[in-house]
Every structure is written in C-alpha cells, then in structure tokens.
Image 1 (cartoon, rainbow, N blue to C red):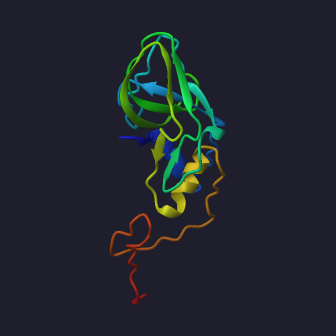
Image 2: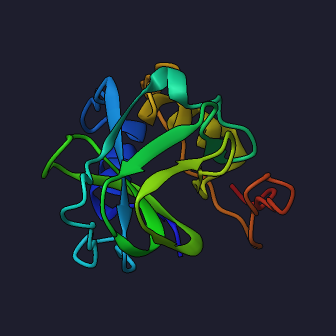
Image 3: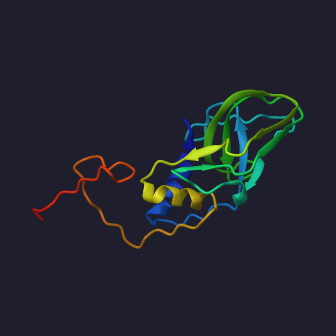
Length: 177
C-alpha cells in the first residue's frame, strides 16, 4: 500500500473544497522506513545511526503529475556510513526531523550497508485517486509544482451508476424535475 497519509489527505480535501488554504512546504524531506508506515504514520521505522538522515527534495525534484501519479524527476541519493537494515518503504515528510508524514510508497526491499544508495529518476511514485479533472491539479499543488484554488461554488448531482474517475459512467437522472 502506498499513497497520501491521513494528514495530507485531510489537507488536500479541505483545500479542494475551500475549507482551508493549504500552502505546501517549499521543501519535502525523503526518508526510508524499515516497516509499513501506514496512512496514520504510526508504522514508520526510520533507520538510526550509520549517518542516516532524510534528504531534502525541493519542488524541482518532482515532475508534473500525470494520470494521477507524481514521480521524482531527479535522483535522490542517500549515503550510509553504517548498516541501516532492510528498507522496504520511502517516506516523505514536511520537516528534516519529526514533522508530518505526507506520503509514502514501497521499494523493492534492500539491505543497506556502507555506501551510496539512490532512487533513480522516476523510481518514486505517489498516486492520488480522485476524479481525473482534479487529481493532477491537487498533486501538483501538494508537491509545489503549481497552485490550485478551489472554485467558489460546487454543484451536487446524482448518478444512477458509478461515475468512474474519468466521468464516463455518469448517468444523471433526466426529467421529472
């Protein structure tokens, strides 16, 4: 499982519906986890010792979202001076230490020992499942690639079938007021 943390999902939805303005941090911090972080972030187990620290990743590190997925557009490199254990996840925070877990994803498990290890370009991806119209706009906003301002008004409709994320299944009732 991978994606947005509960913290970031709530910020994105509140921003999307104009309930609060979310201004993303200019820099994200990429870390590693030995265990599944979970959407609540309680499962994050970052390596300790051996020179481990999160790596800063400005908005330039991220590509533009496409198809509901955003990827790293630059390599992200870690340097281990000691063993870090077997890493299975990447984590993205809004702070170099502590802070809020924003999103996370899986990596092929790898035992990290002394040396350099990196995420190649495009190796990290975060996907957001929302209707096509808004998902890339929200991802680009959250990763500091573009600004998204919520519309002043929303209009609620009904559908007799699953509208699907691309809107192709939308079946609004016709007639009878």
